[in-house]
Image (tube, rainbow, N blue to C red):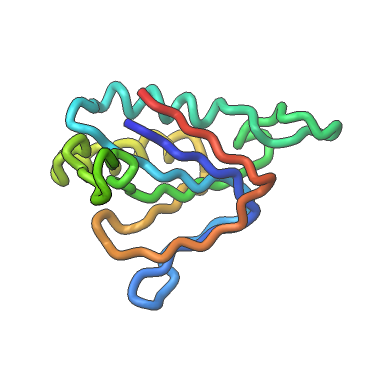
Length: 144
């Protein structure tokens, strides 16, 4: 499982020209699932995500967590995180099959919702337009 975490001041997801989710201060999380991922891995990464201290404190040091700043999360399924680019056309053979990926995507979101009050999401498998204002910019890759 791979997570690309972007600290944002605002973000939204649009499907069919309609905004379906939006957040203010928090994280946009692009989530990729591989064939070997499990609920245990998803839970571990959800815990790690919430405990990350990448928001600035009063001294400008990255010392505060999402909970400390009352932040929000927007999770987007992103199978392309498993692209293998040996040739000019990417291969996605390491991405999890859609059934497994969707199940773990929803499980991951459930794990976040029991810990954070505002968790938004995209639509699994949809053609989405994601807008965000990356704060910093600050982007982190977490893998299990």
